[in-house]
Image (cartoon, rainbow, N blue to C red):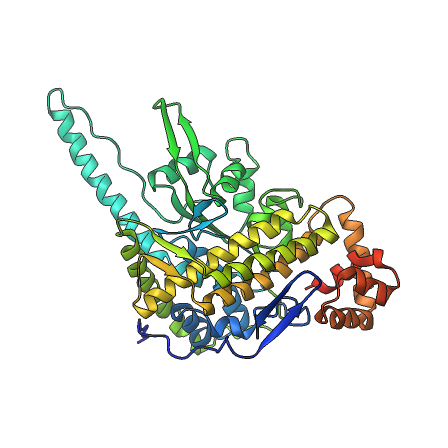
Length: 466
């Protein structure tokens, strides 16, 4: 029998010990050991410190149950998206407004790499979805009884048809259909699709183009629509909508055809690395997976129901020193990327900040349940804040890599030429990496290694290449 305990997490990796000192001309702060925000020599996956520092429910799944690295990576990224959609009544103040923990996540991989591991993340929310479907079935049954009674009663008005309650919203949908489902579910839902073609094909139709809805919902912007049949005006105030997608790169281009597409900067991307080995499909150690993740889903159902029953939302906030480090770091990233790409990646950096805040919110809520310390104000633990930074540092590298792959003016030719040079100049790339760890700017590195500070975009590509 698989057991999942709700007790204290026990010892965690010590994040407050000896740290790395990051220093640049305009910025000066200490990054805890393992965060490696600018270390481009680490593997493209998450550093081990990420898994060691997760809240218990996620940490156990990653370290004690899942057997393969690709499984852990796909599960964790998918779980960030799924769990963000099942934590109601939590909000934090960010950039002039209150926001919830909802995220849009996207896993990219070649065929057969392991996108299917995402199904474990979906299991976390299945009991909640089933609970809502059972409620919908019961409401429909009561409606049909009342409808028959109204037909037999003189002058009795028919009852209103009940909502179609669910958590997982179908991607194969029209815009009106999705808006209607969101309205019936109080603006909450998760769009979970392992073949992005389904969503891309829906968005390609006139009646199904709800790309604008996805962009607005990411920021919780109020959405309105009009139902002509009932002649009713509907309003969805502050939708709390999460998205989990996976596909190959050619499918991604169908959904996000260019870098200018507004959906690009709203997703956190993760690229699974393929393996040439044939996976042992008869590994008996994995027989525990179905039972374990089914029980884990029941734990998240308890968390969801307790939060949903709260009369007022819990308030999440960072500690003052965390806010200062947060602003300093993202200001550095914005200047750094702006120096190379102009305004192309401004939106990405801005939204990576929001994503970081939401990941920290999610971890803090789970940690509060783990420790039995759920209070009206959720103050971010240092462990969870630094782990959110670690995760987003990895996601940033993935997003930059995709930036060079997505079509944009001169992008295909530029990326192709940079790729050839990257593959052929390993010694120069290694020297650039070494200089970056010493705090030099891209222009300074380009001048020292390539004898031309104007070649800073080449250095930028090399240092951020996955």
